[in-house]
Image (cartoon, rainbow, N blue to C red; front, side):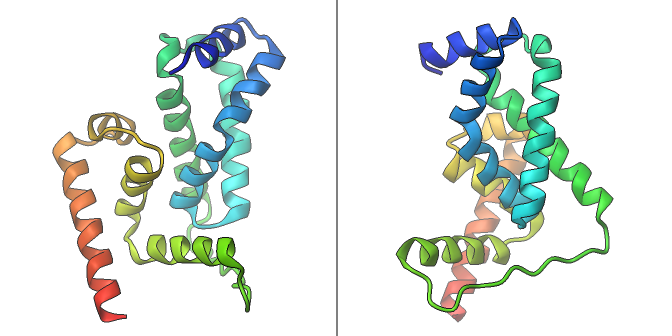
Length: 168
């Protein structure tokens, strides 16, 4: 974590609303990508992010070490996502796919397709490892599983994607 983010974390722990807002803005893309990987739905991802931000504000003082803020906020987000999933059992969302996507939309659709191919237990490790840059040991702590289980899930996810794209 760079010095500026550490400074913002320290000020946010002192209940500085401007520092907290700047801190959340720095991590908004990270939060969105992680929530979207779990929930596969923009509206639910936004709800989980909102709950995460509120929880972080309320519990900022409980963060023991400033340098672990990213892992701390990610763990809160993961818990919020799974709370939403538990609350919506039996509800299925289908998002509309644009007919003629531009290059960025096409890339987003390919990413959504790749994540949709993966089983739920594989999506989160893939996003945390390949998109967010967490190490397997950090992912293991966030998910409450062993480092070996994270490596296995990443390997199986790669295998699922390989098979899917070979058949396509």
